[in-house]
Length: 445
Image (cartoon, rainbow, N blue to C red):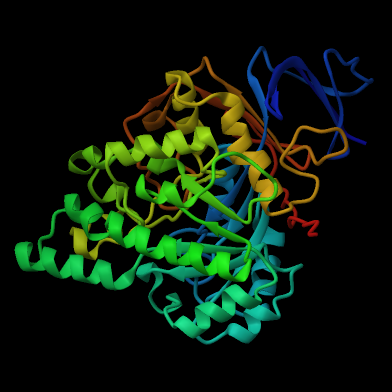
């Protein structure tokens, strides 16, 4: 029997902050109270007033395995996640081979069971050709069905109208969509090439992957979901215009929900001249007005979840000219620290951050016994000190790619400790365990 007592914490949970202690016994939260007497042999950790929060459940990551292990692996990227306070993740299907069969889902589970330091789940990918698999998906193997309604991922683009109708009509799981309209993007890119030739500047990225391309695709997804009564979750929204598609508030009856990513809240298009391809992602980071609209939507409930879309590429790949450089950023290690910057600035509350990174993804995906600090739940916890800085350039980067878009920043908070399934995995900059984590379990109804 292993017992840990976290003392003197500011416990952030279910809309409140309470001073107190939390005890962990055999992987689960045993007691939450203002004061707990430590049993003999218990390990004690003095939080000294730091925030104790449920670990982040990141509903959108690309860990690159199998097929792109030169960019990242389940082992390396889950290590970076744990260092950032991400205790569970849901991983995307655009690897090689693509996760578009039950066999591929089982293979990912097998890989993660041996190597993942954070808890894991995987999406089944939809294509124009696997509608039968999508309709008959084993719901114990997949957290949802991913539909790429944009050209980010080559032949995983689903653009056949009949297939889209079939997916939205017949999928037994939540559908998560990447929404950008490919013909609009192609027309925008053709105009940019006509003007700049092969030397398109990165500042054109938000004009190529434009507001119009996003809204056209997102509105199509919403229309399909409304007609078929589908449970739809639209990923990485980037525009003020798209916010009109979603209802404010946090009603559990919502059938259409929305996600924003941390980098779209942190950066805007004024950063392209200095950050360049380091912030090139799809959908694109857009204007300051769009950024502000996204923050407002987090606060009014139109945005239900904050995630990362962690998608590493090598530094060499990112150093290419704009048109040849791939889109995607490594983000899991610094996601919560970047969100705490909004807390420091008064744009978000810490309670709101916990709601959008832990409670809401647990509810929307019906994750069993995680996402809250509740007695009997698995002890997936992160301890963040809001008064200690993190100098990004002076700390290790655990993602295999070895770089971060946050280079040069000094965050005003620090991740002190991360617990996964009650095990202290990361503490004061040191990994204390490399024990593999668990597959997420779902209680669907």
